[in-house]
Length: 83
Image 1: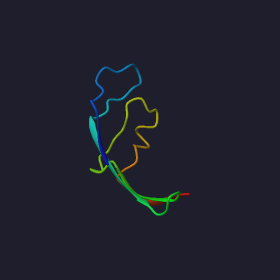
Image 2 (image 1 turned 90 degrees about the vertical axis):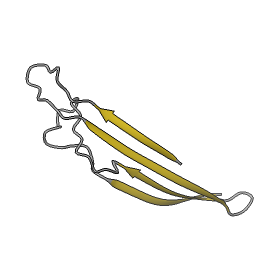
Image 3 (image 1 turned 60 degrees about the vertical axis):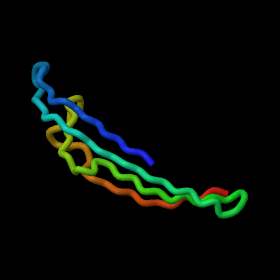
Image 4 (image 1 turned 90 degrees about the horizontal axis):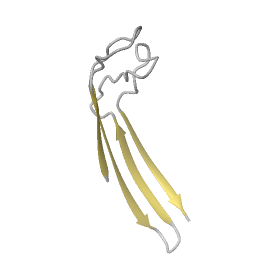
């Protein structure tokens, strides 16, 4: 289980031909559960969430920030086995 927060301040000290960007805060979380099926086989169940607040994030270092922001909210559910 884990949680993550990533904050980026607004860009105000700009070089020529750069545009200012707003600050943003991205939240993420994940949870995993392992089932020991047999002595050698395991089953992992997991859920991973990214940008859970669906924040509009545009990193100042990206040359595509005005056309393509970072991805919005996403949630992945999965199952993985190993033997």
